[in-house]
Image (tube, rainbow, N blue to C red):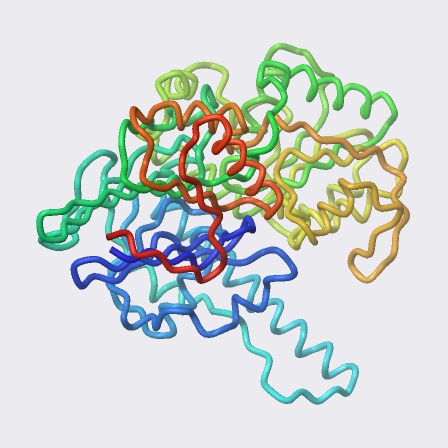
Length: 466
């Protein structure tokens, strides 16, 4: 079996791992690059000819894991995309939204070039289109958790619950070559324990090789028990000052987590009555998908859905639908909570809400998710005195804060707990999906504590696992 690292190698985004076994060639994930230094890779020829691939095994629907699939479909992939039912649903939503953004960005660049009288050497085209997404979805086949799926006579795969987002999976790939059998576990994104909505991550007892994410491998999250306290304090203090709490929000899972926690504060009357806006068409669709796929929810959440404290229908909540409704939010009087995408402030309606509030000392910009390097969200979080947004330079006067406990990724302790499940060390542990320095610290910590053989693969590095 061969394994190549085609993304998320000493970086966070672009997750993609190539495998070759028993004549099969496939990918585990095929993600979009979102960090500015690596954006050109989205446009480069894919390292493996797409028409030579038989399978894509998709761990979950976040774009850094799924967002490049329509492009390689357009470039010749004609195999099978295998994933869970909930991921298939969310993937359709996420990819269609991404394609619309790609088309809008291309159209905006064309108009700007025309205004400026510029000529370009090559036509401006979107990375992929909504038609490419429509061509992608018929290739998707659904797999159930824990049920082996045979890819060939010698290769099989099992999807195990990752506890990260709805339908997320870890992938256990098993290949037989002659008398030898090799098992590779791809962690995908490992969730936290005791999270709303999703079940706890799966623990494995053995594997020959493990590919593990390390997004938060060098730190521990705040105590999740304090989320309600910290969120309530932020809302109360900002409301008292007459400002808005503006929250850049990832549409998949984070928006739903936020509604869960805010709904508890509302039902318990722990915060003043004020408007709460979810201003994200994609988050609205994802929220509906949560209700369609309640079989993926944990037992506590299924009970809550039929109680009188539904997390998506609490007093004061408005799920915004039209651009006109979105614009009207900033014309409102009095404090409000505004959740909008994108989560790293790289696009979407959140840019307009931040532009209206970041210059107001009474408002708060609250981050509740990972901010990749070179993103506008990261600049704000790291204390930039001014930002460039929507063609304007605005001084940062609003309060900027973060609550880390919302993360859907396991932290240092969580990753250690996941590794504790292995009854014997794998032959090799590959540490990926983390900033270079974080991945290196994670790898070194595991070497020192467990004395395992740990590798820190580079982009396009190839391993022969036989």
